[in-house]
Image (cartoon, rainbow, N blue to C red; front, side):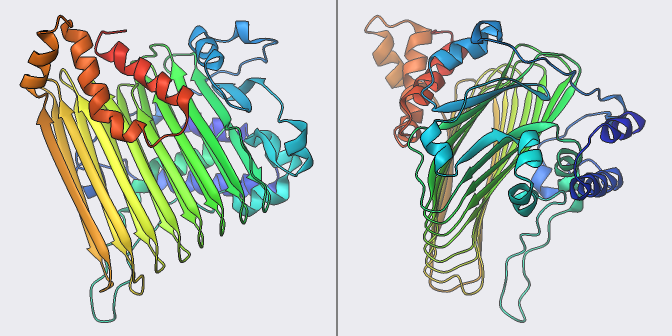
Length: 450
């Protein structure tokens, strides 16, 4: 732990943040790495020697896009975001400015490190409020005399504690009451040094009746023995609308662990999309906590695991207030010797009447050697609700494949067409054309039809 302790000492900042970092690191030091005996991590084990983790080296600011990694250049040319940050490891290496009319309305979009210095009051108010160092206790509020759900195993907070202690940078978005941001804002994160780790944090705050879309992308070349650890905090106040998109396309050899969590207020809407395509091992948690009546949460995800990739998705739809709606649709593809894991829970608290919650997970298997584990769950403590869940796993329809092949379409293109069609009902719910085109391009590469 000496090296990580030394890394902690390099972080400077206000007293409150230094104290929080130290407390988070102390917690991290006491926790075990989650193992197969922990239900939420039953099918995914992370083999990491923390004493040998090396921080990603610092990077200098570049003057123009042509000096960024080629994959980032290509992505930026095809995006339609209104302003963006590019982070290489711990540092912002390129940025565009927020349009002046948004700045005049009080919108803030900058990197988190700068936000701590220039907007300390707002950052201190919200940072760690949604994704704390420890795992949130999402025990369902049950009726007296009944047994509520078990609290999470403390070890589930191991990586959250590390991210809370050692985050180097990330994105900060703040949209004041009643302000609507039409064009998406974006953060493009890359790593360029194998055998290192980086910890990042995203904090998006939408005040009452505000509206914004934020796209959070990760990309790298092949980087053996590299770790990307992160946290995403989404604050959606009463009447606000937030669309959050996460696209993970790390190179081979990267281990990705990230907890994404949203707090949804009264009559507000959180739309989330999680896309997992890269890395060797990926564990992504997406949680929605519906705290105010009339809250709405749409949780979408796409993933395509091939070769030896291992993708684990853990979700939580926690209904803590009455008259809320949540809809989860996760669709995945498995090929070669890949492993896919989905564990999803709908929790309905006592008193959260008129809850309307759905959870659907579907997986398409392109290979008989690929494996898939799916664990949809319900825990309901109210008696006037409508909740359902389901999961299906199956191979490519051979008749459909034969139909396409008989019309002269080569195998790879036919599979790409079937995979895209399988994922289409998720893609059609994403009103971001450039994002959809980018995802379709990754799918084509995975099936060899690019």
